[in-house]
Image (cartoon, rainbow, N blue to C red; front, side, top):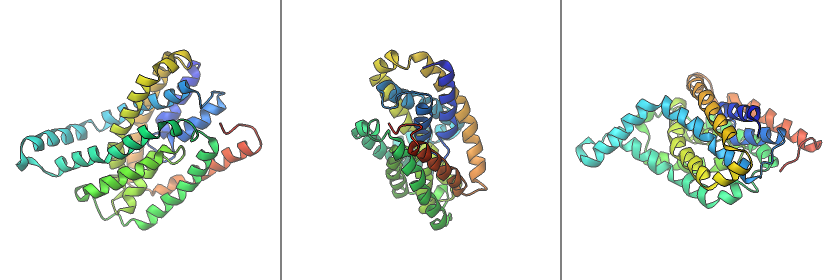
Length: 277
């Protein structure tokens, strides 16, 4: 991989990781357009590892919230009288992250294999757009952060597993689930960010450990590091923008783009300009 390709992919990752448009779907398409073999073990590992840059941006952006929740969690473990809303919310993030960890680990060969297909991306882009529209229509958004329950966290965590399908979008899935449960859009978005941190850190760390040899012999570590750093910077800006955007706009604002992207890739596939795998 050339450094200019790494920069492009880092920008794509940073822009799309937290927007409800699917970073994996975009990376799969762009990697194909750049002539990379998306099913190659090194490219698959690269795709997961550069997400760490975006998640570090999330940690930096929400650092004060993370410290608040962590402090409340440790206080609550030591003192039952200190078990407040922040203590419970910390547990919700921990428990809500378990489903995607289990499903991602058990299904990792399918996720990095047969699902890395552009027809899957097209179907998910268009199909999950319907779910996003339904979530905005069904959700009354009358519940706020202090109203979130363990059941909410587990449901959102389970729905997050659907985002392992390229094209669905992790944020699109989790925000949609939160809206359907009646949670307001900003709180649902913040929950999406909090649940992303353990899931993406675990995925990136696992790929770095298991795919180190494949990275070294194919993509190379220098392009991987460059792409990760670029994704960190771009993702930080993307997070700040999205939180301001969802405060005043519906999630369905992204549906038109998702459908157009799906139709464009389908046309490219149909005319044989790119291959599905």
